[in-house]
Length: 279
Image 1 (cartoon, rainbow, N blue to C red):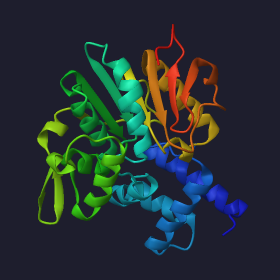
Image 2 (image 1 turned 180 degrees about the vertical axis):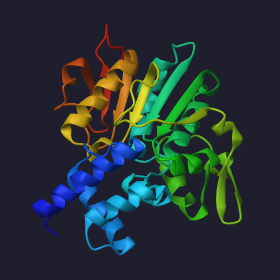
Image 3 (image 1 turned 90 degrees about the vertical axis):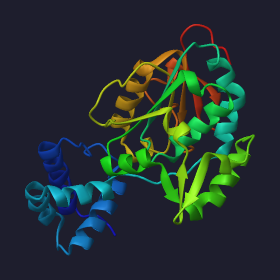
Image 4 (image 1 turned 60 degrees about the horizontal axis):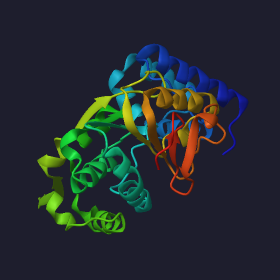
């Protein structure tokens, strides 16, 4: 459905109202995706126009929380694109092994499956005890799910397949126990991860880290917001630190493209260009 100029104005006013009232900034998100999600919310609420959403979100915080869940992207899975995790296992972690302690930032962790995938990878490479994974997202509902580490048992077959393709050396069943139609991840994996609220659209540098993963998040941002986030990542990375993006994302057209070396174009792995590269 084609968006009219009036609808564009209504969406602009709605996003400005959200920012002014709650501090969540969707004003620089890719508009096609935002428009689609707002229309879904409008339809579910039984409202005739986007403008009618504005007083609802201003005066009803519970309605805004529902809207926030619709606007945020929480689609993820364990060992998504396993080739990346295989690359990390064989090419990146051997270099990171030289550090006495490690910090990893998983930005936009959604419901946490990829953060736990990293924890498994680190455990198998004997790096878990000296590594902290900071897994962040702006969606508190998704973070609550991530902290619990409980997922639908129906997905375990796909998770196992991905784990094996990522070079997993054990039985995947060692990392969870099943109960009441769910898989609950082991406490030893949770011990490696600190979950926290962080909004890439408005917050700044999170911590100095050796590895940042932010996959399939930037595709929902416009160019200006992408460049803001890329600069945050650059400032957050230690010398020769690594950045992993999603398959449809790249730094090639960003304002930091000359500050990174492309290590693997297929899996979107980049290394901060500081000093001599080691991979």
